[in-house]
Length: 461
Image (cartoon, rainbow, N blue to C red; front, side, top):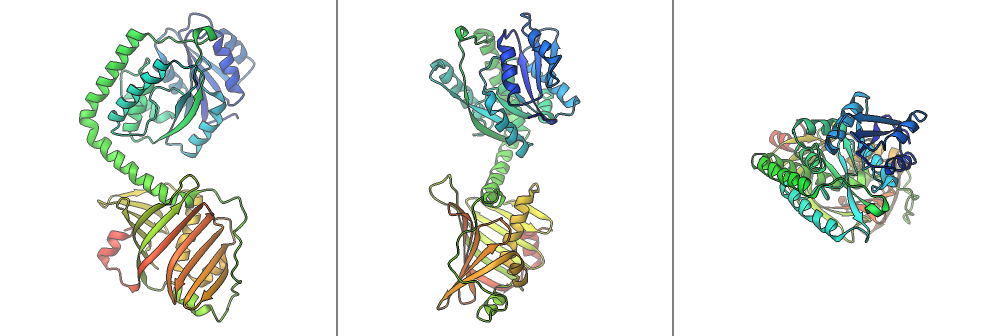
């Protein structure tokens, strides 16, 4: 894969023959590869420079003297931004990081370009116990500095950074130029609002006998790391209100993502679910009166309980609140649990409003937009629009009825509506049997009139 936006950035200092083998391995999975030689004196960069003469995928930057890992990364970031790159995956030069995961990390970065993609190391039994246990203190300290979870491992250097945000983190501190780089920049980027995605990454531990290279000085660099913790904790004393506000905002976005995950997911690969109910032809006199009664003419309001089923959970995620839908204003989902927030869907897109009335626009996602439009069309139930988008099947038993809507596109496998008389009781949106949403309605009020205050509070203004 040769990218014009994402490159692999490898800082190197006296790595020996490991440097060339690492670069060769990386090229099997990604290009371009930039090596920043941090004042090496062992001439380990010479074979890479020779290779770069015939391979344009490789670039070698040389610093005149050894300044530290962070300084080498900073030099590479500056040059990469000047060359038009937007992201870089940083990895060590000694071959311990998993080059075969580069493509996965880059793909996640492309999907979430604002985020840091952080590796969470999985050590093999050959890794010393002291190394594995010692990291726990750094993990605990970072949790204090960011007021909770979000960074699984602050020391593992296999990461994809958004370059503009990383460059700003360097400008925010005179430090982070040595072994304090890995931890300090991700804390500062977290403080700045950069999202994090943590991904497990098996890594190799190479002892010196195996050709492993380490320039960590236990006295000097441990003192540097202690000084780092003291600086970050001191800064947290005045940053904590903003960090706390940021965490609350992220929690709201996480709830929204959880609520809309089935909506934004890729279309199901399987064929639409088999529906046992008979086909409802257009103009069917037995069904047309009910279909017309389900159509939204006036404002409508209802309490609801959502049960969201995911393949990776044994039980459903349960959300509850009030839904309001207006022919002119759009759809408003007021969630009371698990946390109070408001989701507004209208012709302008998607809007998230917190319990204090503060609005946050959600980035457009064509798949999510398409699915949300389908969801709104179901709640409005315009018979003409419904028939243009779905094939209808139905069955009745006394006053109870069931409608199965099979999409003509591949957004859903099926949408099933059930009710009693002319009242809609439940909507089930099915992608696969293990990935679906069941929305149970209660106390449905049709023909309500939202006041001006209601419209200002529950809809976009």
